Image 1 (cartoon, rainbow, N blue to C red):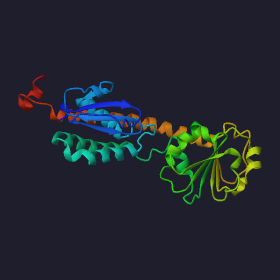
Image 2 (cartoon, rainbow, N blue to C red; image 1 turned 45 degrees about the vertical axis):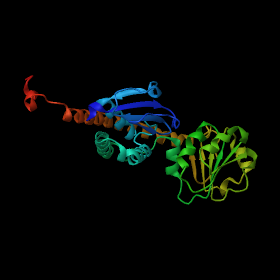
Image 3 (cartoon, rainbow, N blue to C red; image 1 turned 90 degrees about the vertical axis):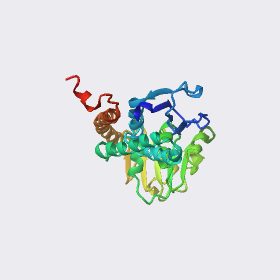
Length: 292
């Protein structure tokens, strides 16, 4: 079964315009492009891709769908995308490819159950999402830098509106492509709608300036991600600081490194067992003893 499995991989982007010939199937995510096949020849459109075959192809895809190559180890979004891919094309696949994907699904479930559950969060976006109360009315971002770009994708499914206040809204129009609920405003417009909202401070402005521009105590929660938040503290009854979040993230990263190592070994062993189970035995099972 695995000897005929072929996989092509390229990091980055969905590659939605990728053309693959008959007998090849494309699986795209926001972070990678994967093509699977049972064909021996390599199409021109895939010659720039990394190529895997047999056991190594199976092992690599199992790593991907277990979240081992994701920024957040063990994340489940990639597993959902894998299942959608299987559901969309599984009925037209050759029976051999169907068997391989059924095995991948079963093995991924085992790896996740044994090693990748309850490992916490180790990104600002994931931690922030877990920190917020359930009854948020809105979220205000003060600043529009890289940190905000990292956080926004974690709130794609949020039901509340999000406003970004920045010195140059036109410069950050790309942030609206991350989420249609995002509204961009000049930084001086931050006052006026604080009641029940969450304020995320991600701009190098002083605590005094923030207090002069808005009614800080009207915010339900303040997340202060300024580098100098300890030296220039914001007075608020429900405050989380960059240093508090960083400490928690580092603890979770230490745990994730240990988990990743044990999960990786299980994936290697699982792929190897799959390969050995189907390896041809020209002399029957007796050949296992031929070298003893």
